[in-house]
Image 1 (cartoon, rainbow, N blue to C red):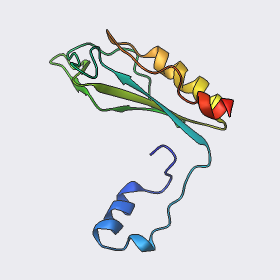
Image 2 (image 1 turned 90 degrees about the vertical axis):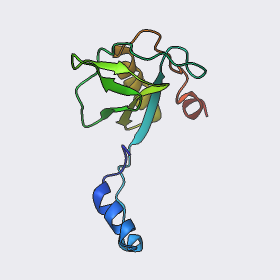
Image 3 (image 1 turned 60 degrees about the vertical axis):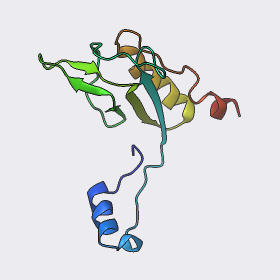
Length: 126
């Protein structure tokens, strides 16, 4: 999704109308990399209700996608499922994307947060 420059609504409308063959998708050439942040207890019994802090403002090169979140009564984001968030970035190389995505991820916190620390390493190594 980060690399798609075409308007997703236009693409979906063309698909519904059976005219997807008339759509030419435009893609960003930069590397996209994402890190999923999971709740405590994931995958067997993910804990719910942990307060999420440190969510960054959306930027052109970084977006945090929400999956297992909701706002509590006070309007504060909390965990509601196993895969809670996905920090995703765009950069000119895998190494730059990896550095940036882990910077974004380290700024976010909720109790029991877990995530892989090896995203992108095979691409850099190879």
